[in-house]
Every structure is written in C-alpha cells, then in structure tokens.
Length: 430
Image 1 (tube, rainbow, N blue to C red):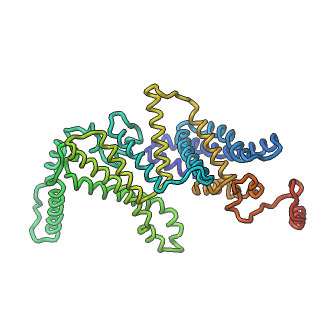
Image 2 (image 1 turned 60 degrees about the horizontal axis):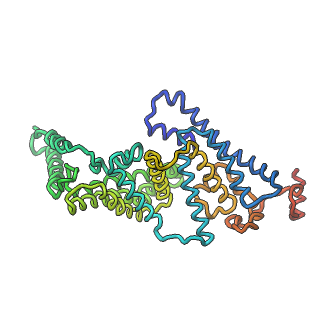
Image 3 (image 1 turned 45 degrees about the vertical axis):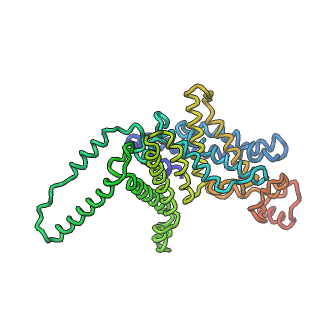
C-alpha cells in the first residue's frame, strides 16, 4: 500500500527523473520502516508493561503500550509527512473520543451534525480564501481550482480586456468549403450552436463587480455546476476502477456498475452544488449590496456547505475542520498570540494513535470502521485474535463484535482454568 501511495504522490507533484532514481526507494523504505516500528514496538511495550505492572489495566493494553511505540516510530518517518499523519490521526482520535462519549451517554449526537460542521468550516475557509494572504499553498490552489479564479478579489481588472481580445481572436474567417456538402453543413451546425451558447452566456445579467467577464451570472453558476459535477463523477469512478476490474472477468456487469453507481452521482452532485451555490450566493449579494466584499464569502460558504446533504461524510468534515484549526493556529503563531512547539506534531501523533489503539483493543465499536479494516490488513487479521472476553470486566464490551471467539491458549501459561479436552489437544500439538 505504501509504495503505491508514494508513487501516486510523486506523480501528482510532477517529480523529475532524479527523484525516481535516487529518492523514491529510500522514501518508501523509510515509510515502511515507520509502520513496521509502530506495530513491532506496540507489541514490545505491550509485553513490557504486563511484566512491569504484573497485570493488565484498562489503559495499559491499548493506550499505555501504543503511546511510547507511536512516539518512537514517528521519529523514523520523514518530517515532510509527519504533519499530514498528525492531522489524520488527530482527526480520527477526535471522532473516536466523540463516539466513546456518545456510548457512555455523556453527549447526544446531533442530527446532520457533519453537515453543520462542514457548513461552518466551509464558511471560514471561503472567507480566508477571499482575504489577502488568508490562505496559501495547497489549500489556496485547491479552492482556486474548485471555485475558480473569478472569486479572488485580486483578480486583475485587465482580464475583461483580455477576454474581449480573446473573443475577437477566436472569431475565425468563414470556411471556403463548397456549400451543401456534409462537412459544410456540420460546420454550420457547430458554428450556430457556438453562437447560440455565447449569446446565452454573454447577453444576460452580470453585475459590474462580478469578474466572470465571459458569462452572465446565471450561466456562470450553471457552468460551475457542470464542471465540478463532472470532476466529482470521474474521481469516484477512478476510485472504483481497481475493484471493478478485479471482478470484470467473472462479473462483466461490474463495468456497467462502475458507470452507474449511485456514489458517483452523489459526489458529483456534492461538488457541483457546492460551487453553484457559492457562486450564485456571491453574485446575489453583489446585486443586493452593489459591492464586492470578503464578508460575502462567510454567507456564501455556509450556504454552499449544505451541499454535503448529497454526500454525507464525517471523515471529510472532520478532516477539513482539523486543517482549519491548524491554519488558525499557525496564523495565531504569526500574530504572536500562540506559542510555537517544535515537537507538537510528534506528541499529538503519539497521543492520537494511542487513543485509537485504546479503542481498537477495548471498544472496537467506537473506532472508525475504515481504520479498523486498515489495522486488520496491516496485521493480517491478528489484531482481531486478542482474548477480548477477559477484557469485558472493564465494562467497555470489548468482545461485543467478536461473538463467541476464544483464542487457542496453552494451559501452561494461563492463570484461569480452560476446557480439559481442548487443553490436552493443545499439549499434544507441542
């Protein structure tokens, strides 16, 4: 999994040949060593704590063993990846703590809470996007790709002149083909369709503060929806390609399922409606207030966040919220209002991973299913082979999702008596 992930990241960043020759393999080995160390050290500290304490406690099998193991392991990983790993694990740990609190009756889950969180996050993100020096790096580039450069206040007013020149340049001289030929008729139909679309897009209401010079406000929103709907649809299709092709020979109908899967349309509708609602609200506020203001982004971003009803995802909401908190924290550091901790990412990663391991051992039902599957894949299913029945004494229902599973134990190393027939069989196997 790690080699594939590293290769994809390298391709997306358009690395040069020297990177693939000299740095790719060492980076893959380093990340693999990090994962190996995290798992191996967890087992080591699991046994060390058992030896030192003389017994298991509710915290020792999960949190206690994972904390030092994760701290040491993250030091092996590249510094450039630590921040991303920390954000992911902090997001996962926060979600896990919330689920634990819900299970214990300490808090009540809010209906459509992930949508509300996304609305608030999108509102602040779009506000920073509109502000000068509000966002930079990948976040700014991603939002620029999604909503377009027309929504950036610093968008040059010379663009209108450039667009006008482009339109004039695009006007091609009429073809000198003979009339009444199929090629001539086809070119006439294409030219007529192009002129019709241009007239619909350009001849319509557009406020003087709007920067979408080639479109009126209505076509601007419609085009934004179509563009991002297509992007979302294609992204979801590409994500499902590997699983579909694995079953293509046994079930050819899976290829059609790839195209007509409901999730493809849901992600497309989510991205498309987000862009169209944001652009439509921004244009409407310009018409109502007769000016272009960064504060419009707060309202437009919040309303655009309701698009998550098409594609509800706690993971997306929590991840973007975590990134927003990180952005605000670094802005506070720049302003001198927050202290800077050089090892903060390492400590946060260790604590977050320890919380997730605590849930994986003591209460799997409160861990995100995708992360639990990742742990099972990483350990080839061995994480599920713990004797969780003896952990039920701590009141977390540790064995709830494991049925009547009981591992095969050697009676020579077991304090409590077990079935004699089974014990004899185990001794014979030695």
